[in-house]
Length: 342
Image 1 (cartoon, helix red, strand yellow):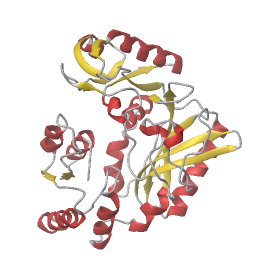
Image 2 (cartoon, one colour):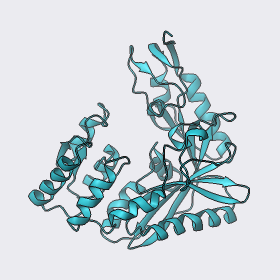
Image 3 (cartoon, one colour):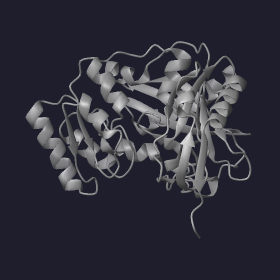
Image 4 (cartoon, helix red, strand yellow):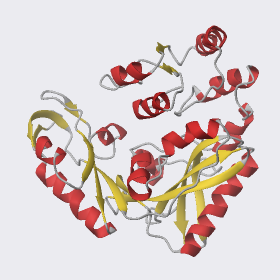
């Protein structure tokens, strides 16, 4: 369910046969052909139709002898898929696990591009962590109920007053003690939730009195965080998910450098012209980039989750160097955006 094209490609390369399920309204047009290319079949279904969604899953399982059902995304389709997968005996996670992991959260966290006032909480219904509290995301992979910390990633933000997310840095510059305390808090959440298998992406606020879990979602981190981990550690988290299906426990190396993803900070409006994408793509320290806009497209403002579709990924020996390289890529992208009429 909702796999990225990178995940599907890596699974296919490892010999897995994958049937991908997406709601066409949520699948970006330029990604659809890539998902379909490496899938046995790309199944499109309206996720708001719970009965129809569950029927597609059950029919596909029966027709092709599916061995496992994985939900790789977020949203209202998670529970229906979890219920059907549990009923079919194709997941070790009972449906209630997904509700417990969320812990009563409501809304979206700052990680989704919103300021803290409209964010998600750790069971209180709202994110009440101070805006200035640094946040890290913790990637884990659970195999047979054992939780393995893959890495911790720091947020880059606009700073005060809204602290909108502008990128991510891996690994997060934390002390060993900080990593142990954060890791223990995340493992406790996963254990108390009864999570038995799969990746998880947990956002943690670093408050003066200790770490506070803001959100815990049973899927891979978005915004190319798996790529950051692969660059900095040489560990392929997406491939490790498939190895975990065979019961293989991950062995995660220490980081040998830093990797950062920076979103292109464009003004809202209609794109008139742009240059620089070719130069960015061939820069030696750039490990990935995406600019999904064409002339005439509407550009989302900073803070809108859609704005995170345009990004650059760089590597470097220090967090300061990766920050500078992201800044240089942003300078190299020259755009003319017509402001929206009010």
